Amino acid sequence: MTLNDSDELVTDQAVARAHATSADGRRMTRSEELRLALADEIVRGVLAPGEALDETQLAHRFKVSRTPVREALRQLAASGLIATRAHRGAVVARPTAEQLNNMFETMAELEAVCAGLAAERMSAAERQALEAIHEELRKLSHLGDPQRFHEMNESFHDAIYAGAHNAHIAEITLATRVRVQPFRRAQFRNLGRLAKSHAEHDRVVVAILRGDRANATKAMREHIELVREEYELYSDSV
Ligand SMILES: [Zn+2]
Image (cartoon, rainbow, N blue to C red; front, side, top):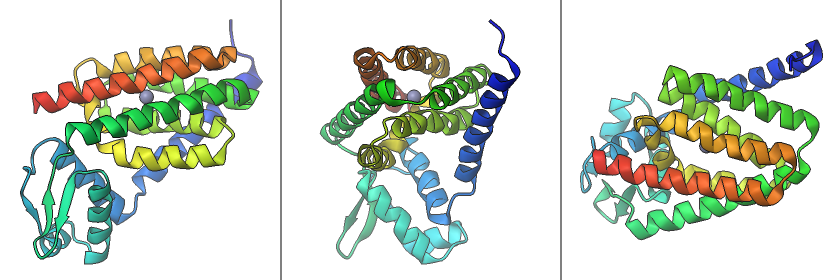
């Protein structure tokens, strides 16, 4: 089947919107940039557990004032990546297996609810936009660029949160993602993960496009559970 002109237009607009979202991602605030950079170093083991994080040194290293440093440290503490101790400042932590399980279990259930609702509630335009992002991810999976894949992957999941047409669920799902993000992101460095991720998304997309709530819920839950397993593989390899 070939797309007619108007379908192509919708598709292009969806891709442009997705790019705009990732461009927004690149125009991150200083504290977001800092948070991602530090989260990356902690998850990769560049910064070792127990290592002290000095606000003044970090401000100097990232050429920012201490305010964004403090904000980034506060968010990293929420992810369990750093621990703050009275009189000693922040030190690198690693979330316990139980904390990680709790975060990923919550993430999987919330994303599953969003996908199920999206299957029933997404408009035709939203379904087309989701397909367009999914197609863009297929191309990126061949290019093997983990950073761009990560950004487009967030657009994919954002489209499903929005498609649930429940602002409250979308909000708590996003808030949970901020906490889980360092661990979700790390796994894209695993060999062959991008292609596998795309195959898992495919099951989600097919169910959503069919309006099949039960299977959309199931496919999304399985996707996030696999993300969690991939993180285990990744963290064992660093
Ligand atoms: Zn995904």
